[in-house]
Amino acid sequence: MSIDSTRSLAKTYLLAALPLTLFIILAFVFYKQLTSGISSSTLPSVLIDKPAPAYPSEPLIGLKENGIQMPAITKELTDGKVTLVNVWASWCVPCRIEHPVISKLAEDNPDILLVGINYKDKNPNALRFLSSLGNPYDAVSIDPNGSASIDWGVYGIPETFIVDKTGTIIYRHVGPISPSIVEKRLMPIINEAKAK
Image (cartoon, rainbow, N blue to C red; front, top):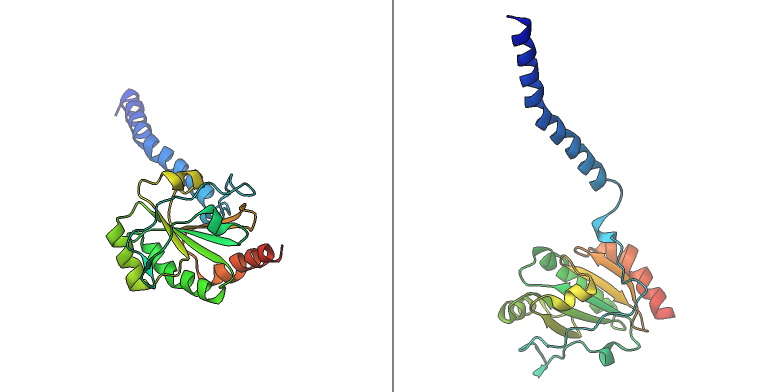
């Protein structure tokens, strides 16, 4: 084999290995970024310590309590109360997983207002979801096209916000809520907000 053909073969191998090498380097960089200690559930929100955006004004038609249509979320309803805002949908599997936890939280804390924003859902599906799993909410608004949720900074559901008595967002949780999250994160913040 001549020197020229050896060099040509080496060049071919180098060119063939280049995409694989770049892929390995990029994969390593992405992995380091993903595991750098930032949890998706604690992503910062530009809305923390700012007034809560407007709630969607349309109720979930057909959702009744004692035969009376449940209201949509309103500023008048939430004024002066610590409010937990839960963004959910019937098609969201993590929402189903967290629903019993949300229900227990509401049952154990009748002094907080629990409201739901039904995100990009069909009314019959949302009603079926609450009918089969129970309705822990004091009010439910629908956000059929997701525009109100954009104002809240929602990019994936479930998401839960704590709004203090003055209407200020003081906490945001991305992802499903577990009993451990309720105990270690939510309740200390809720209790502190109730005490103020």
